[in-house]
Length: 234
Ligand code: UDP
Image 1 (cartoon, rainbow, N blue to C red):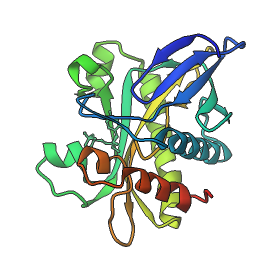
Image 2: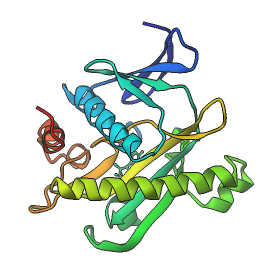
Image 3: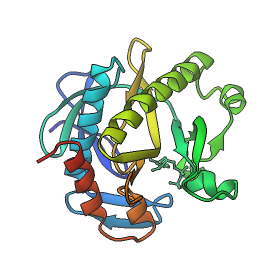
């Protein structure tokens, strides 16, 4: 194993022999509310590694570039080294979560078109919602990168929304992170998993994602397993 480059809430990053390649190791840690709620959910890391690899492979087939290279083992992936843009890109198809709360809406109302939002990645501030003008005024990243991230996020939404629907799941909303490689290309990075998406069963409306943990609904691992099963796992 190489040197530890970074340890986040759900993953560790290590160097490899190739300076342009990093090893990602998924953890079983679950956190919510900016780290205030914490638990270990045994088996979650393996499921998120599998589900993220599945989505990154699906997106690669549809010409969406990402940092993903290959799934190495139960908990590990190889990825291209990128510099993460410190913005969380959220796409919403249906009202839920912070959007519903901020605007006083019931959850579950379909939106007339997908909404893209940016949140500034800063734990000490609790990742606040940020406007595009703020991004440029604070020189967080360039307009070109923002335009590219938005375009890719909407394309990813089209692909994933349809794909999940075919598997009986409603893609309510999700969060993406992007990075820049050594050539300055914008690449999808981080993960796409029940930790970072809201997945509702199309028939029953059951939540099959991290809201089960956030809201103490129980059966967290079972929900993640159900997603894996629907996507063709074991
Ligand atoms: N999300 C995430 N990481 C975060 C915040 C949000 O992966 O730090 C995901 C979350 O799982 C949901 C979407 O982004 O699919 C929108 O989250 P929202 O803004 O509604 O916030 P929340 O209700 O999770 O606080």
